Picture 1 (cartoon, one colour):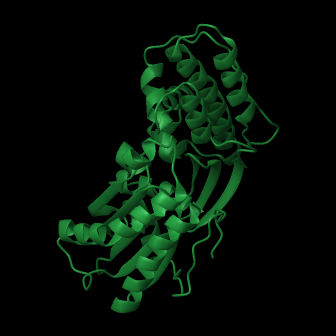
Picture 2 (cartoon, one colour; picture 1 turned 30 degrees about the vertical axis):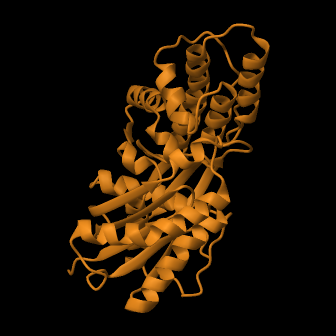
Length: 333
């Protein structure tokens, strides 16, 4: 069977990334141009600034990705691109670039759901991983438990009813004066702290999550306590988050008869959450899969992997493909 090279493009938020991946699993290049330093001064991503920077970077990053992979556009078989969810202006830059490349080279175009891409990052780092399995997706905008039926079919088992985990991390970090992005700072400081606060946990009859009450309780503690240790707040908050994620993940595995949890999304880089999940799953005889940190955060290699599996399963996009800011998992725009 002929090798299939997929050029992936990711521009849903503040990373301009382009990658070349062979057969969905072998990364030949994965160039990531981050805008973190630009948005730091604003305490978060400014959509208009993000879009402008994607426009400035996209062609440079495409060129770098092809050069590092030692291939040309003629060698590429598929063009894959994130078309949602995300910041619509940022998404449009990647989608426009991908459509232009697909039109000029007459190569197939495949639109990829950003979260399905995060799940696919695990195919790159775990070569034996194949669906079906349960995936816990934790990121700045999403907290989902998903049954991955096959490479292109997904069922949401549970999701947050309010704040995503990453969103709560960033808001708490901002109130404590930690610079953007807050998640990694909280994770680092938590290693120096002691669990001194019993913050609330929300549990439901189903597999849904809620973090707004936890976030409010933490913010109230910060605002009302005359003296507190940032490190203690961080670790107490992480402990509360981890307990809920562990509880629902184990329930999802038991209800669906699986023994392996696949972790995905930017918050999958959090060391505390990974350790808690790994320890709790091991006690039950279950295993945990997660990608290296570079594939947890936004990157194009995961988009190329997901795009490859869509393509070989007969899914392609028209050149009329548009960015969809609130695209749902499993939807095809």
